[in-house]
Each structure stands twice: as C-alpha cells, then as structure tokens.
Length: 393
Image 1 (cartoon, rainbow, N blue to C red):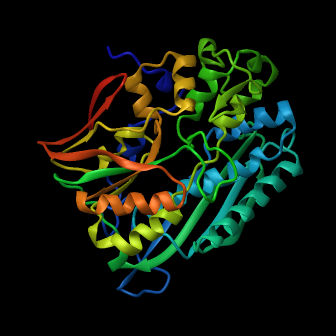
Image 2 (cartoon, helix red, strand yellow):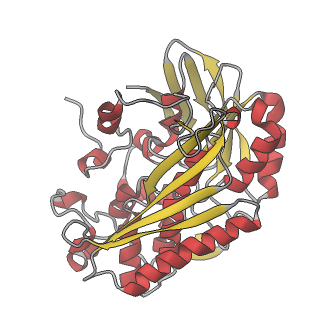
C-alpha cells in the first residue's frame, strides 16, 4: 500500500488526478494541447477567431490572509489575495498566447459573521489597483463587475474567485509542441519585479494548505478553528513552530513569516507579452507551474523527457517550508514551484533574448533544463537535495 503524502492527507492534491479523471471525456476544445481550453468564437461567430473563458480562485490562501489580518489588523494582505485570483487566470491564458484585452469578473463568497465590509472593500480595491498597474505596462484588463454573496453556511471564512474572458485570433493561439532539442527558460517566482512594490517570496496560490499548516504553530488551531477543516487529523493542523509575526532575514531585510508566505502570485504577463510579440513563431511551449509544481509539464508532452538540472538557488520561503515540515524533497518539487513558476520551451538560440526581456522587468531568468527524446512522458529534477524522476500517471 502506497503511503499518502501529507498533502493528500489534508484533503488536497498536487496532481488533481480525480478531477482530471472526471473531465477526461469532455470536449478539449479547438486545440487540445493548448494550455487552456480554446472555444469557437461564440461571441461573434467569426471562424478566424476564438474565445477563452477561464476561472480560478485564490484557494486556501484566503485562510492564511484571514489569520494574518485577525492577528495584525493589516488589511493590505487582502489586495494580494485579489491579485492571486486574477493571476491564476491570466498566466494560464498567457500560456495559450493571450496577454491582452481580457475581461475579469469576480465572485466572492463570505461568512458575514467573520468577514466585515472593510475586507470586501480591500479585495475590490486590490483588484482595481492591480488592473491599473498592469495598464502601465501595456496590458489591457477590463473589470466587468462581479458577485459578492453571504454564504456562511458553506464558506467558513471567505473565498475569492475570478472568471476571465478574451477573444483572440485563432492564428495567435500558442499550442504546446514541446520537442527534443528545446531548452527550458525558467522565469523566477521570487525577488522584486519592476512592477512589484516589495520582495516576493515566490509563493503562488498552490501549496498553501501545506505551507500554512506545516509552518505555523498549533496555537492558531485553538484561536481560529474556523480557519481549517475540522475533519483534518489533529496532528496535521498547524503542526509547525512559527508565528505569523516571526521575522526572517531576506536580502538583508526583515520580513514576517506571514507576509513572506502571503507574497502575491507574481504575474509574468508583461514579460510574456513582449516575448510573444517577438518570438511567437519560435516558441514550442509555455508552462505555468501551478498545480503539480515542477511536474506540470507532464500533461503537455508525449515521447519527451524534460530534464531540469540547472534550477535557481532555492529561495528562503521554500527552504522554510521544508525545514518546518520535514516534507521529503520529492514531494516539495511536486507541490511547490520551488523558485520558478513559468517555463518557456524554445530552441537554444533564442533563449538569451528571452532572458534579456525578463531582466528588463527585473525578473531573474535562466536556462533551467532541456528536452530529450524518450518513450512516453517523463520529467527529471536534479537538485542539491536529490535526483527525482516523475512520469504521468
């Protein structure tokens, strides 16, 4: 019998095998190997155009934001949650070649007895501030309103989701065709991009259930029972030894543990917009390393082996999570992005220019691996902590 990972025992899944099994018979759209489902142009009926409709949420990051806000009164973390929900849509869509003229609609479900109006206002302000910031970098986003519902019977604290819609030419769709001979350029998830106001620990909106419970001390279980599933095994609830307001030194600055884990999901849209404008015909794949972490690419390759043997130095956030949890390194690379959340697959001769574009936005980029011929789909991570091989199950 295979022992369940701690992530699975907490009722979440890095691979989402059950979800993929449930939808395997659904229509996969016009371009089955695109990162997002591409629909016919239902909006206007033009055969040369297509539609993208994408939905995602900030996940359990809202629960961590709730803890931090209750402990400190700091409302600023809710702006980050709004960004998380938006970016989890936008960067998926960018991997299909869509980086502009996108409409957004939000859905917020809250327990009104715990989440007051000031929190809702902070989420909505965070949404509009993010849109304005992206416009400064030439990314046109449009807010189409949304819904806020008081659903305390089914939401323990708050859930923040976003739906995104765009219309684009079919000829502009990027369909993953990752092939042997490609190199992999990774875009760093950590540091401070030109369009960010502070250091970003590199956390997206995946793995937050593990990060929250593995790092934070058990004292939060008694104070905030509404912040976790009461059916979880007690030994997996806030089993770490850190407080939200503990600080660690990163790049010579003190950052609280709570703020480090709550770092808003970085968008790579400004970078990808420029990369696509210049290199669309040279790109063989864009992979957003969200659910599945460094194994995400397995869902988009056939007869290829992606070897990642030149990864970024592990950022402090992920080292903190591993040291607090004792999670084995194999699982860490399957749950978290571990330092890069966007992968660009292309011939080696174009890699240097892509890295130059990323550097122009203050984002670290490097060739983190390559693609080799293989029978079936395989990914290998070579790290300072071991060599880990993964295949699509």
